[in-house]
Amino acid sequence: MRLFQKLRMCFCIGYAILNSLPSAEAYSADTLHSTLPEMEALFLQKNLQIIAAHYNVQADSALIRQARLWDNPTLTVDQNVYVNNRFFQHGTDASGNPTGQVYVQLQQLIQLGGKRHNAIAMATTNAGISQLQFEQLMLSLRQTLRKDFYTILQLERFNKLYLQEISELQKLNQGMEAELKAGNIARKDLLRVQAVLVSLEQDAVDNAKALEDVQAEVRTLLQLDDSKYFQPEGEKLSAIPKLPNETIDELLELAEQHNPEYKMAQLQLQYQKLNYRYQKSLAVPDLNVGPNYDRASNFAPNYFGLTLGIPLPIFNRNQGNIHAADFQVKQQQSLADAAALSLKNNVSSAYKKLALSLSVVGPTTTTFYNDYWHLFENVVESYRNRQISLVEFIDYLNGYEDIRQKQLQQQLSLQIAKEELNYQIGIDVL
Image (cartoon, rainbow, N blue to C red; front, side, top):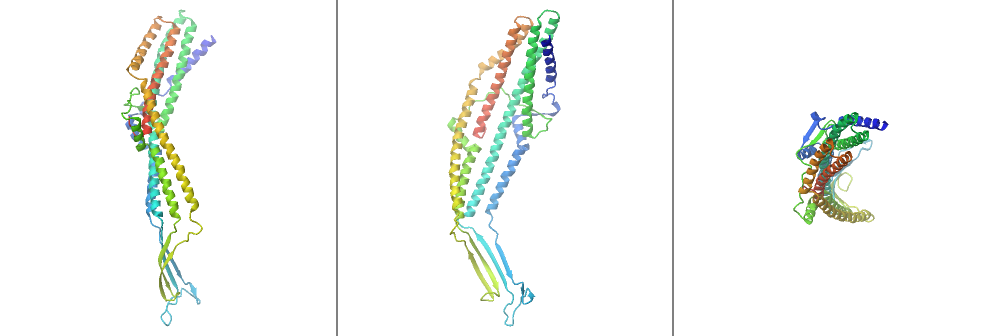
């Protein structure tokens, strides 16, 4: 008796929780219906990470202009302030010679050894790296967005599956309670059905939690209010993509042209090579050149001269930085080689996973799932008419749920495998 009461209590609690679960209908006024292209367009407009990364690209591009600027000239002025008990004494003596001293010098730094050219090249390369980082971030977030799009479709279909099974079992439970009161069935049969019902309700609650997690991630990516419910439109989870027409080698060539992470590794290698050249150019001393004017402190009353200044590279020839830059080139070369190998393996793996996912779908599989669904309806009706036993009914119910879950997971895996290949290539080949 206690077991019956506990199961009945769990059933009532589970039913109450299930009826309170949020769904697209519950959000009807705040539901955002969107196709995948519309979702991606909104993502590009609203996502704060994308906006922040775009500002970083613009900031690094501005540094190219800064690297092109010449150093400012230096103006030096010197004059007498106090002499012979007088301040700022200027004028001429009886012979007409100036009596106040003034010295003016203008100097311009001229960088030698290609420093300015190398600095511009490094700033340009660094801006290119920032652009590729932006593209990689956008590609990664877009893959997450698409995965969430298809995951929502899957979880909503899971929800429909659970509600369908729960609805059938609730009808069955009501009828069996009446049969129990009439003494036509044993209590253990009713408890068995209620136990399955409680288990299904808990599965439905867990599924709703997972759906809410994905909805929360989508709201963050699209900068939506927390009351919004995203409803995918226009795409079918059951849509079957095809393998790309290109071979794996051709796909690898495409990936080398479009994959931001691979291109970034190559550009970072170029940056380190430019840095090595720049450090070598720093060993070349720079030239300071400029005119100067001196009044009343030289062999001529008004002296005009030209100054040239250059440091002597005796002790510091930037040896340490040059050696460090050389090692950084070798380090980045290893990382670039690793990125090339990783890209080759990732493209090949993504292609094979898509092929494996496609190998288990086809007309025969679709027919099997449809036949299984119709058989489920017949089994429910057969149990109501007592043509099969309770054990057979529950066994088939569990089998049907397992088959439907596998079908939906298979469909989701296929879409994810398609998006993984697109991600590794860097463009949509499917």
